Image (cartoon, rainbow, N blue to C red; front, side, top):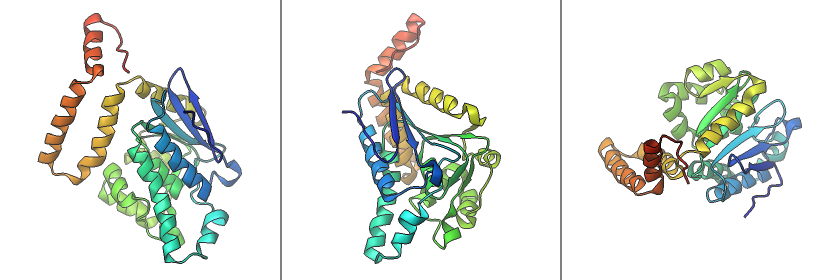
Length: 266
């Protein structure tokens, strides 16, 4: 199966096994529409089992990563909906985060310019965030009279930056600079703007060369263990690691070590 998209760009580099999703509405700072939300979620679900994909990069074209929901296409239309219709929309948007977190492939967000609202959420839902030095980020929801508790951010963001920092970001809705985002651990690294995609794709390619099954298990347990006590987590990790030891990647790594060569993981 080959993934084809209409509302954004998708490409797969066969040699590196890195798939790249590019939000492609630069005239609107890549603002999200109903169609983009739906197709993004469908694409991440498909990437979960897509042959030949070892890692995913998501980025935005033009001057910004993503400015959030489109004011004209989405926000204006929401006023015509009743509460059930609004709930359908909020579950649609939350479904994108679910699809990203359940996708077994590592996801690297390559962030430039404006990273705001739902765009900030998409960045947060990625596994790794590599940002250009001009990538400022804000969770804007309270700025438009809504709750900062949107699309799972009150669960996910505190796990990345801590409860206090997450509270400040979600309540204020203020932008912070790339340097500040890196300082608090929200961005994993900062690079120059012209080197952003090179750095993001290189890191994704490194992950794609790694032990795919081991990375899948790591991501799954990062998701699951937040709701467990330490003792249950230790037991779950014992079971998971034993399963990894039965996987061919473990034997391959040992053979490569003995032969003094690089491992060739499946």
